[in-house]
Amino acid sequence: MSFNPTVSLLKASKLRAVCLAGAAAISLAGCVTDSLEATSNETDDYHDRHPIVLAQAPTTLDIFPGGQGVLDKGSIDDIRAFAARYRSMGSGRIVILSPSVGGYGTRAAVDDIRRVLASTGLRGSIGLGSYPVADPSLASPIRLSFRGLKAEVVSRCGQWPHDIASGSTLEGWKNESYWNFGCATQAMLAAQVDDPRDFARARALGPSDEEMRLRAIGAVRQGQDPGTNWKVQLTAIGQVGGN
Image (cartoon, rainbow, N blue to C red):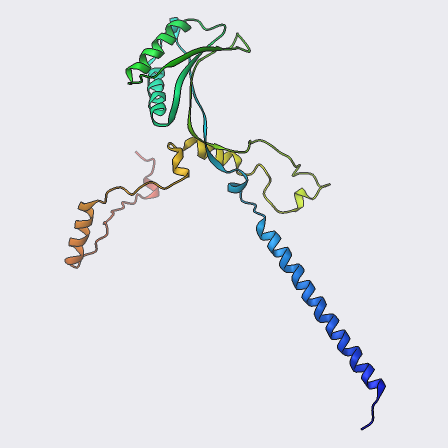
């Protein structure tokens, strides 16, 4: 059997080409995997960009007294609700801040505020102070404040670090939500939830409705539909607004 060097070189060249192609494919697959992993780690969710956290922050209430520093019924109700909030979430003491200038009837109003707070059962110390007024021509309220548990958004809304309308940068071409997206929604949600702890844990289930459960079991035993029979009465569109 004779040895042909030309054929051997040709086979070696083909084998080398196959090996190089395989190595290139493996390398490309590794790059794609790394790229996918890097993309999956980057989130565009506004819940992660503007998270709601629980913090010890001030809760304030502004009271605008009427003539002679008299508190109206609405202001008294607000103070009572403020006291209830303090008992639920507050710590330390309540501080009453009066305007440094321009507060007509302020002393009488502060005394009334302290009496309303005492009538709600608060027995802690109440601090008194003042705050500077930037414009004396504007109405300056009496401000009540305490520190306590509060839900807040970490980031500050209204920031626009990138010009999303500019065509000279790549920010407007990424097909991603802008940085400020969702911040106002998160801030409004944090302000509306009554108990900030609801963001950290679920509340315990309330007692079941035994009467509803017995009614449904009795209906099933009699071979009836246990669901509620809702009656819907439709009105013809022509009768809407008619006499």
